[in-house]
Each structure stands twice: as structure tokens, then as C-alpha cells.
Picture 1: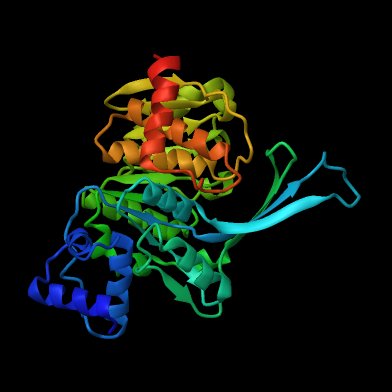
Picture 2: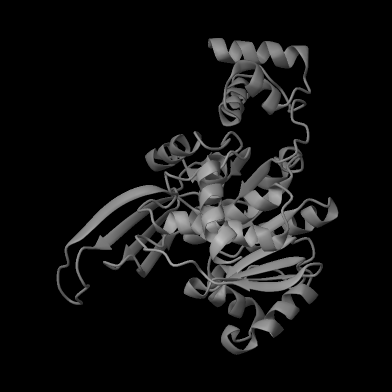
Amino acid sequence: MNEKERQIFELIKENPYITQNELAQKLQLSRPAVANYISSLMKKGKIIGRAYIVKEEGTVVCLGGANVDKKVVFQEKMQMYTSNPVRSYKTAGGVARNVAENLGRLGVNVSLITAVGDDTEGKWLLEQSKRWMDVSLSWSVPNASTGNYTAVLSDDGEMVLALADMDIYEQVDFSSIESRWNFIGASSYVFLDTNLPKETIEQTIERCDQENIRLCVNLVSAPKAKKLPEQLDGINLLIANRDEVEAITGLNVETELEEAADQLLNRGVEQFIITLGKKGVRYYSKSDGSGHFPAPNVDVKDVTGAGDSLAAGVLYALNKQKDLKTACKYGLASSYITLQSNDTVASEMNADYLETVYSKLFMSEYQ
């Protein structure tokens, strides 16, 4: 054991029910760092079981995709059937991972549970992520490739084409999630994306419903949205865009949005947010009614990650006991920051900056 592992081991021996927050405070470490040291101790056989994990208010667990994102950006107007000058680069991505990083940058205690390949890209991805989140319960799948996503963007930052290789997630059955449930059940909020298999999604929703665990589901894409079950009891918050809503309701959002919202609420969803691009967001709630906020004017550099940032901003606010109306404003403020960044997760993101942007946008312009 190294010195930090030894210190953590001794503190856990003294109090097996000590929280990771308490360990972090005693040793002046971040909670993700503590979680990673604990994971190392478990792998070395120094710790058996997880008696030290108790329910901690304000913690979020993100279940779903973690990918290597590759971006290709046209430097000039795209021309078909010829060579085009572009810039290309890679970043850490994946819906659940991006939401987790945004939350981590906002100071939320957040953990990521995902699968990566037992390859160089998987090791790189977890290494890049663990600064902002606990990745100790994620795992590597032998003989599988880490998920990857390639976005082709126009010279003005709009998406032209996206390519996704997500086969690895088909190997994430519910037993993989269930074996980590004592940790998941200790969280204040669970975030779930639909990169996982249909059966895993259904059983996770059912388990959250049974145990009254607050669950936010993000639909990722129109094809993956269809993995949702017919009955949606157990989903406290559903976040989706226009195409995804049409895929799961069979209704035209342009002309039948209210009917689509009613359908989703009747199927069991407690709260529902639909993102409408430049038209902003609409929200619907069984207890708090509905409303709309237009999107703030913003100089867009890159749209990639804006939806994930919005989801993180909403969860950040709900985790602070804000109502859904206020949470939507935080979501828009968060996406506003990301849209002005070339990064999938804006390096400028932090709680103080988000509060500043929120005040600028909503304490004056919309009030």
C-alpha cells in the first residue's frame, strides 16, 4: 500500500461506516480520489465488501455511455465528392460520462458506472475522467472495443453527420448493475442514458421505482429512445429532444406537443423536459404544471455536448432542491456555457461561473 492507501485503510478499520466525504475531508482529497484509492484497496484484497458506503445526500450516480469522441470540423463550406480541409481532435465523451464530468466540475459528488474495452482507449478514457468523478465501479470488458463516437461538424459548428460504435454496451446486462446496487441505492439521484440494452434499462427503472430512488432518464437518440418500456413508472424526470419524443409517442411534436406530454405523464413519468434547439425548452410536471423558456442568444462554436450540459445543469439545480422551472433555467445556462466552447465539456464550467451566467440570463433578461 502507498501512504494514502494506508491512511484510508486505517480510517476504515476504525470506522467501517465512514463516508467517502468524511475520508476526503480528513485527508484533504477529492471524493473521486478517495473512491479510486478504495477501489485499489479492494483489488489488493485489503477491503472486502462495502460497509463504508452509506447514503450521502447530494450524490449522483450516472449509468450509461462513456466513449472516445472524435470531432472533424470543416474549415470552409462543405463540398461533396471532393477533399475538404478539416481540423480533427479527440476528447472524452459519452452521455453519462459527459453529464458526470459537468456535475463534477460543478462540485457535485458524482460517480460513473460504465463499461470500456480492455484497450488503450479505455484506459485513457477512465484516466481522463477520474479527476471529476468516481470511476471505481466501472469495468473493462475483455476482447471488446471502447465505445467511440465521431461527429462531423460544419464550419459554423452545426452537426452534419455522426457515427457511433457502441457495441460494447450490449454486454452490460442487469446483473452488472445489480452487483453495484448498494452503491447506486445510496445516491440521491440516478442518471440513466439509453446506451444500455433494453432489458437493463427496464430492470433499472423498475428497481428504482421499487426502492423510491429518484431517476432521471436521457434518451440519447431517436433509435435508442425506443428501448424505453411502455410503462414509465419510476422515472422522475425524462429529458428528450424533438426526434426522441416523436419516436416514443408516435406524435408530431410540431403540432401535437401537448398531447405527447400528456401521454408521457399518463404512462408514469413525473416530470418531462423537451429540448427544442433554438426554441429553447418546455417542461411539464404532474405537480408543477408546464412552461417554456426560449434559448438565450449565443455565439455557437460547437453544439456537441450541449444537451449533456443542459441535463447536468438541471440535475445540479434539482440536487439543490430547486423546482423544475428553476432547474430548466440552470440547464439553459449550463448549455449556454458549453455552446461557446470547442470542448464537449467546457473547461470553464464551475459552480461560480454557472451562477454568474444564470444571473446574467435569467435575473435580468427573462425576469
